[in-house]
Image 1 (cartoon, rainbow, N blue to C red):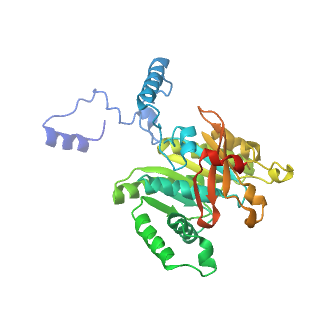
Image 2 (spheres, rainbow, N blue to C red; image 1 turned 90 degrees about the horizontal axis):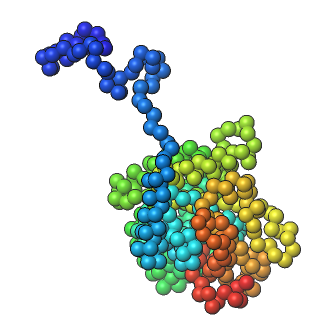
Image 3 (tube, one colour; image 1 turned 120 degrees about the vertical axis):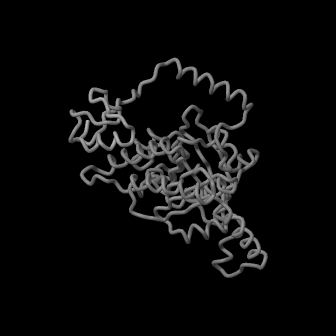
Length: 343
């Protein structure tokens, strides 16, 4: 029970001595547990009976019918992608993949900006590009000013006016950037937890979207295993973090060089993802990016991008085409009647 001094203190406070035969509270440590530092608490079972689970499934169907076509998740600005995913949802892990220079960072940046401009809190982890470059890209994107004008010194007064307005607008967004490098997936978990608290304290916002650019830049923690096994652990943990932290996780990913060896049709496939097995298995949705412009001279660009969706949990594979304006680091919805000449 304890020593006599403990009993004396209890007697002074209550006027009664404790019963030495009384069962100890649950949080007390049993003699069999002494020395291991673990309280004697009964472990809660993880298995669930089918009845409450199928009842919850039926309720989710009923809720979807009540929505009348409204998305279950949130919009990130590209209407047909939103529709294909039934909205971007908390607890899910999505992947956007493309070859170097295809525009995946631009897509990730636009998804993040579109979310933040609508009031959704965003945590953007850039593991490769510095914040200063991201800020410039975002300014050109939001102001719709061509970055070529900055490079060749031809910016006009109206361009400055647009950019100043964008600075003022973006300053109100619930958007956080982090350009730390050499990070691990365990570090990412801690960063998300810390940023969630900052967002709540400073803006009263619940973190919704986490963007990681890109996931192959995440370091493994076990140097004794090969990179493929490290990526299995990393992608598994990103999925776990999305669920446990209740956030929508978007990982950008690199495509290998295999499409370059396919002759005319260089569109990527899921198998072209570097360390593709674990990414394909863990992702709730995958978007593969492709631009014909990538293989053309700039004078022949048509400013269009394919977003192939070969995997979406609970949905059908589809293809979405968007407008890609590289000098503004911007993507926009493209009317379906403009798709024909985009193939």
